[in-house]
Amino acid sequence: MLYKFKSRSTADVIMLEANGRQLLKIIGKGDEPHGIITVAQIPAAIEALQAAAAAEEAAAREQGQASGEGTDDAAQDGDGQPREAVSLRQRAVPLIDMLRRSAAEDHDVIW
Image (cartoon, rainbow, N blue to C red; front, side):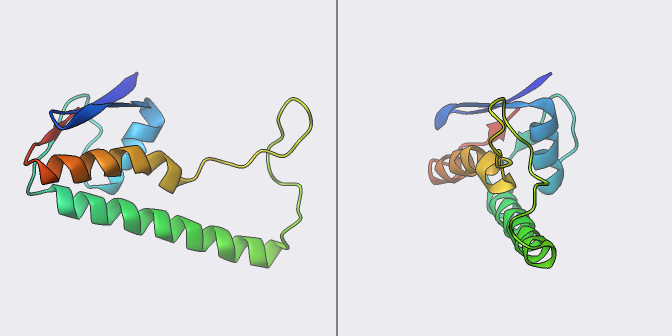
């Protein structure tokens, strides 16, 4: 399943189910297949997403310092090169942008 976030202010934002569910949980919405983030709820949603991303980054920094930066725990691509995981901030940026633009134009966001 995919989550498709829509607003009259922006193009659609499409996410895989696990990523969409994670972001909806962060902003306090259920993982229903359909829902709405009203204009009044947008500031709190943006704040929650930014706080969660900052907390994830702080935890990653602490873990990196505790385990020593050069460990081989990271996943590797087909060439044996280490891959960096996609951070919560990177996943949330398109939705945060949609929320900001929707709030500026007084439009709700639905999925």
